[in-house]
Length: 276
Image (cartoon, rainbow, N blue to C red):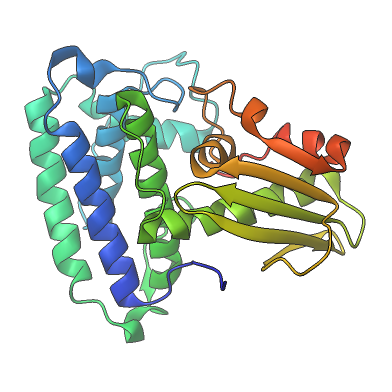
């Protein structure tokens, strides 16, 4: 099968709308302490994930970031990028859930209305890149849908509501996770030319993707006939936890079945996180 990255305006728009809708559906019925459940994002609760989504979507519709300094000594803030990201979350941390939901609905409605006007011809136009300066609209949406879907999964695990692995956004994010694993492996291990890693993804969103290494660069393709150097069999939830570097599922690595070069497989699994 070809890769499942989204490329068309209609695909991006549909995936964006579905994922934002899923997040609202997950959190709208929450009561009291449910908003304070810990997620796999270090230092962030359910309310913080919602605040983070709203903070970034607010910037993307042109609102100014609030002037806010985060408290010193937050253990989960490890870099200037982390400080910037935390600022939007901490600014909203004391808001009542009703206010968080009100802002979420307001900014996402504006964002989706603007995306409704986007066409394929706009994909290469300049757009806000948030963390890394100006980029193309296609690249912005590619990364943004991945980020939104990953945070939807953070909420699903915290609330015990698994799902959405085989949606447009889920399959798009699967390809992003596989490519991220390839890049991370190349950076850390520099596998010899000809090394191949087969990801046999089971359950909802099932797929088989081959990462082939040459000149220290990974290339993701459909698997050909013949054995890979290493085969990893895992489901989408496990791939997501590992690929996003989340802390709420410490047994995730133990669920991966390895075949072929087991030592290489274990070394790869030591660190496959590709999200910032």
